[in-house]
Amino acid sequence: MGVALSLATHHLSDPGFTTSGDGGPVLNLLGRPGAWVSDVLLLLLGGSVSWLPLVGLLQALRNLARGSRALAGVSDDAVPEPRWPRLRFWGGLVLLLCASTALEWTRLYTHEATMPGGHSGGILGYFLGPLSMRHLGFVGSGVLWIALLVIGMSGALRFSWPRLADGIGGWIDGRRAHRAVARERAEDERIGEMALREREQQADEIRIEDVLHTPIVIEPEIVQVVESKRVARERQKPLFVELHDNKLPQVDLLDAAPARLEQTVTPESLEMTSRMIEKKLGDFGVEVRVVAAAPGPVITRYEIEPATGVKGSQIVNLAKDLARSLSLVSIRVVETIPGKTTMALELPNARRQMIRLSEILGSTVYNEAGSMLTIALGKDIVGNPVVADLAKMPHCLVAGTTGSGKSVGINAMILSLLYKAEGKDVRLILIDPKMLEMSVYEDIPHLLCPVVTDMKQAGNAL
Image (cartoon, rainbow, N blue to C red; front, top):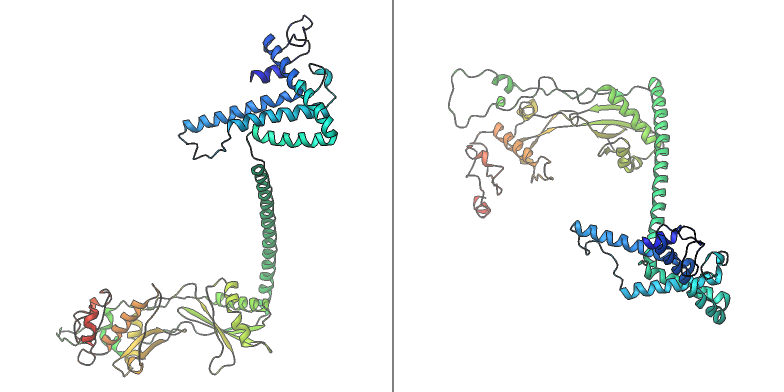
């Protein structure tokens, strides 16, 4: 710091090694010692003496950073720093000063009068400059000293030119990537604004078309399940309780369905979705017309009439694209409907209706089924109860992912058998290796043997 201050405040009128001064006050901020130090350094190195404060400042900053890391408890290994041998540092500093003074003597002439000794580059430059000019010429000496200056800077200032080039290249690449991201974001915003204007314009067109569009036929909403005579008969509780082991359980033991079924899809939603289907398929180049809509408890079926020349395979291939356009998980395409010339699209409802087992077991369809092995499967797409005869099935496999309802389906099938037949008519063997699903059926009279939980005994039971 003292050297830098003495050099910064050097004045020609101050006394020094090369001059006695003009007898006036010393203008150097460090007084007579500062004037002498600055005069000697300028005499030896000329203007190249400026490298010394720069190197000293960088070294002080490195020592300060190393001390801060030590106080913070961070080892030098955690913060990697290039290790330069002292020989390389001092050699680089000497090489830097030699090259700089020689270049100063051979290239800079404008400020010779202000330098002690009357020439640029100091005594060191006065010795090296003419020597290189005599042997290498003006151009050759310039190339040599510039190359040595670059090498000396790397050693004295303790940095790596390849690493510096990598850093500059990384910064340039980062700026390019930032600009590319900014351009992409601006392009996305522009496309989004255009899409928003287009959607608003399409919405206005759809509203205008709705006035002139032929209204679709909305089939009756989810049908009410017709109760069987058994349900009405069981509403009257017996006056005297009779204990019969094989008596059929009553339907009212199950949770009853609501008296009025909830509306899963409104007529306005059906109309709007129908127009959206026509519009989205039209955007894909497929002209169709929605002619009917049948809402169900879980899905809604839209019957579509393709225009002349439109193949059914075109609509099938667009199922995923149409589902994405309508913000749905999936769409099922029914290519042929028996007795009709139309196709159908089955879309999942936003709000599903809860289907109670009591609805199916209390329906006329279930109670009028003659088979003792009648099982309840649920409802079809329009809400009609669906039952099946297990005796007509060679095998019945229930499969699905976790949480898809396998256990619910199996329990519904077993309860269907228990509500249809007494223990003397239908016998069961239940095998439950997980010891979770079938334990509730331990005491029913329909079991041929206790619930099998050991797979080694399953073969004996069968």
